Length: 163
View (cartoon, one colour):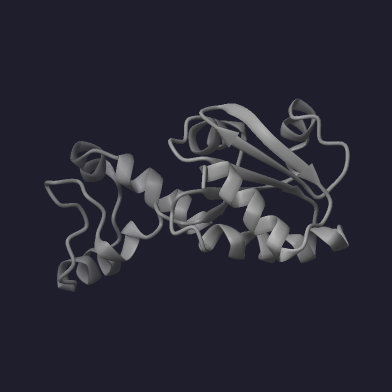
């Protein structure tokens, strides 16, 4: 995740900003010897980094990240409120990711650790974990609390995307 944030921050820098950055001689030598352009004129991501945008699931970093990647998302987003210490969360998380991955990019999944992002948990009325909330266009459209089996998860995800 730190890599994604670094790539995103680097990508938003203009070429003028890049010229101002200090560069060590070993870095500049390795950069000159590499055949992959760092920034192209089209400002599109290299193929190796393009998959970062299309990730089926991601960890929410902060409230601003939540606003950009969940509230303003064009796709429906399943928000998995979980905790590291929660046994049922450890069971539900991978099963939910699998159900989301089967939809081939029609829905994404945001993972929110309630210990790190208590403000989001309070804002969405999370009183127990695991809680999964479906958001489309910034509005909550459905939710459930606790574990569901694979068939129930797949039907929940299908209902969210409208199948």
